Length: 115
Ligand code: AMP
Image (tube, rainbow, N blue to C red):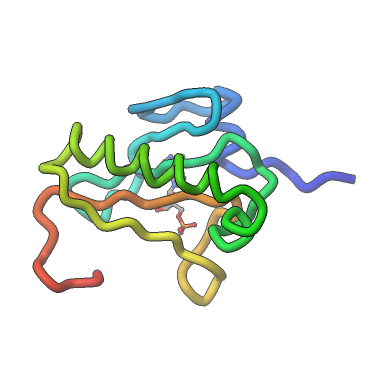
């Protein structure tokens, strides 16, 4: 028995729409549906094997490095090049989708704020 696909698997499979800004063979990136910053993108590995960033780092550090590289590229294209990279890990930290993803926040963040 397999778990039901997450919302991100359904976006990757084009079963539900998303505002996709980047895609290659390893990752997809799209706008967060509930943005917390003027620019709020999600960079999502296509594999559903990893629920969070630590498991991805353990198993496939090259894929994690690619997620970071794509985040940097997109921050340059969609914001001024500066960005905050967030990986919520665990329910207590606000994680709601258990398919590893990077939040890329940019475009006029409040200086010093973690919010
Ligand atoms: P997290 O809380 O770290 O697991 O992040 C999940 C993120 O996915 C949240 O910021 C949601 O707003 C976002 N999200 C959920 N559903 C969608 C969707 N259909 N399209 C784009 N972003 C979504």
